[in-house]
Image 1 (cartoon, one colour):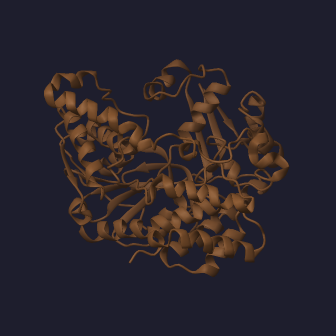
Image 2 (cartoon, one colour):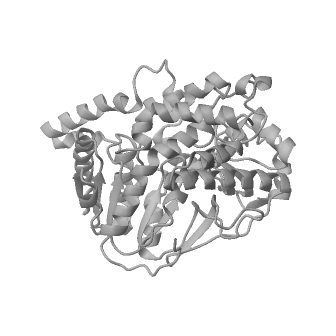
Length: 461
């Protein structure tokens, strides 16, 4: 994978693969429509689910007209058609949807493995990686074949590190991953420090809260969903690792973050339900499978008591909006047409224009985090400038560095399985996982059971 290029100021073609998402697909397209660096760009919405794609396309087209954007928007069910000559591609696909995510979370509970999320590490993360790998590989290879030279592929599908690593060997494209965990960290810290009130997380508040408090910025490093604070800026003051103790215990938003501080000597980032899955002796019977840390035993998005899927929950409102817009375009004046807090468009714009942007990315370590192999995929604070990506050097206490290294080694092996499946390699990867039992026979049996249930997605014909 090359992290260096000379951006060319040509009209960009940006493809959003997985654009049939009624929430994510629409908002990503909207962010591109409203970004000044993509004025006149071609935005292609790509998804195999034609019916959902048509709904998103129609909504985005109405939003384009309302905003006055000069972008051109098209939709494509054919991948090669959607990626032809594309200078950038964003991937956020969901193979098997919430149904298989629910299975990934529930089946391991039979073996006493509880996952508050189950989409990044543990057996849930492994199955999700294997399930998405064939489609992800196809997208990357197609972009390399039909896209513009040195096209940027921005990967946002979980598990982020293994899937990003599984395609960064493909020549002709530049692959990076992105996650908004840094934003979740900043928001949590701002609330805990009393800089802003704790309010319902509406789209508007996600943007507006920064106007209510001093500057709050973090620099994180580690594995996706398992990152630690290297620097924390509050107003004009920057706290390094050795100075973070001045903010404790106020900054702890629960017993888990405080326990990690006590055990490892570092401040862990993200919403707590993510990093708790990566460390040993947190999601065990001793701690009531995480309940004593304030965790749920599975993600609320896929809880069996949920009355409808997230996508179907949004669909009636969208169809109502579209019906009104078809009858009277002026009804779109009441639509929420605004950029989100996600910097996806900013990242792609930085690569397109050559302008400087500081952002967290998922990419090869390249010597950034001390004690972690250079080739391992990690998440860390980076700078994009003139199409080049630079990484600052980060040094954590040995206890933290060894945990980041262990997770990176596990995910590297999982990425190898995503490229070419091998059961022994998969078992080796899972033996390094904090959630798994240390008996290879039990791991092998569990993985075989889970693979058998979703074999058609993991090994498509």
